[in-house]
Image 1: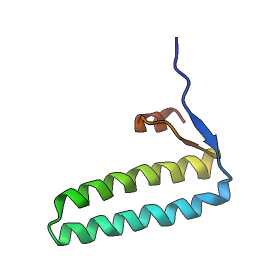
Image 2: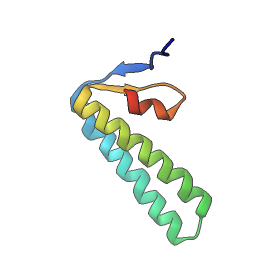
Image 3: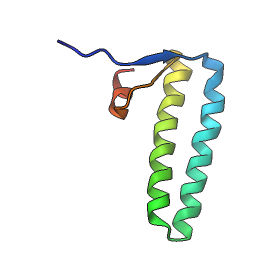
Length: 76
């Protein structure tokens, strides 16, 4: 049996807001690396990647994953 992914519909216009958030996480990760705060940089870059993936899903599909498994973005 195939497990169905958890998705939520989001207005495609919201993609721009998600992109802003993803870029903020990325900037924070870069700043943390400059300060050699490696754990903070790691957490922020992972969050940036997750939100970038959400941005793409929203922009092109009008949905985003809301599951706990971030790999579900592949099937969203």
